[in-house]
Every structure is written in C-alpha cells, then in structure tokens.
Length: 239
Image 1 (spheres, rainbow, N blue to C red):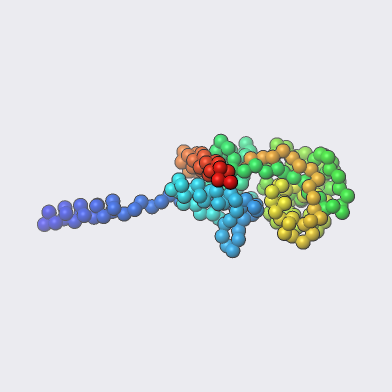
Image 2: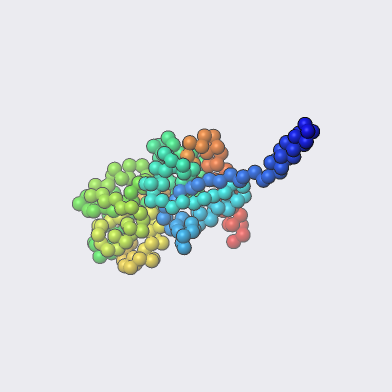
C-alpha cells in the first residue's frame, strides 16, 4: 500500500512538473495618442504598441494593453494594479513611483496650435497673455512650460478633444504634441485650418513600470527598452 501511495505521489509530482509554466504577463495602460498608440475596432494599435508587443514576444512576456484617459492611467499605475504605462514623460514626481529605462521609445515635440483665422502670433509662452489655452489634462510638456503660460488654461480630457476644440475656435491656442496633432488635424473637420504657431524642444516618451513591482519593474523597463531599440535598428536596416 505504501508503495502505491509513494508511486501515486511521485506520478502526481511528475505530472505537475510537466505542466507548462504560466507565461509572465504585464498590464500596460495607454491613452489615445495616434499614430503612436490608439484604439481601432476595439484593439490597441499604433507604432509604439506594435514595438512593445513584438518586444514582449521576444522577451517571453505577454502584453495586455488597457486604454485609459491619461490622468486615470497614471493613477492606476501609481496606486492600483496596472504594471506600466507607455508614452509618458519623465518628471521628478513620477520617478517616485515609476521605473524609467535609460532611453525613451519615441521623441515628440510639445507644440502650440492655433486656427489660421484667429490672427494669433506667439513667439514665446509668455505671449499667451489674454488668450485661452487648451491643454490635455495630466500631460507634461517640459520643465516649467505650464507655469510659463500666461493665458487662461483650460484642461480637456484628451488630444482628440483638444484639436477638435481648436478647429472649432473654442480656444485661442492649444498646447499639444506635434505627432498627434498632425494626425488628428488631418481627420477632423476644419483641421486643415489649424497650424503650429510655436514649437518647443522635443521630449522623450517612455515605457515606464510601477515601482510596486520591485526590482522586476526596473528589469522590465530596461529589457523592453533595449529590445525596442534592437527592433527599430533591425527595421531601419531592412529599409
């Protein structure tokens, strides 16, 4: 009887060992920032989404993308169960709860946009005095950029709303980003009447991971960054 019990236990252990280990998965938050990350037919798409998805496959890490308004995305990475966030600018405050890799996945330039019929001319951020300035809630645009705006700041929930309201002349100017602005303005009614009036220095956008993951968060940040760089170089060579 003891032999049977021993054999049965040994067989169970062997069966358990033979089962494939569950692959590691990370849950990543993104907001609508085309052409880098956006949703199409209910699926996460975009240049950066594709890079991260392929990097994850190479690293053996599954990637689950969850769309959130930016403010909610950053809060859920800090306080809840989201593992990481993409397209995020590095700040001292965010470094308290996010691991950033050495290099970002993309660079994009903060840009002031205005309707061509508004007559607005802006040579510096201080020239926004007396103007209404639309911004995307939660976004960062560089060191002391928001503090340097002298106009009336009006936050909106996302980029799509910002560029639509500039085209409708509901703001005098809007502070967005070059890549997403160009994308949206080609698609919305009247978008061809909105042009950049002031371009600021480009910033790096990162895939950052929550410090709640411990040292694994830092490992993921660096390994994804390195793999993304490798993929980009490979694609450049193939062109």
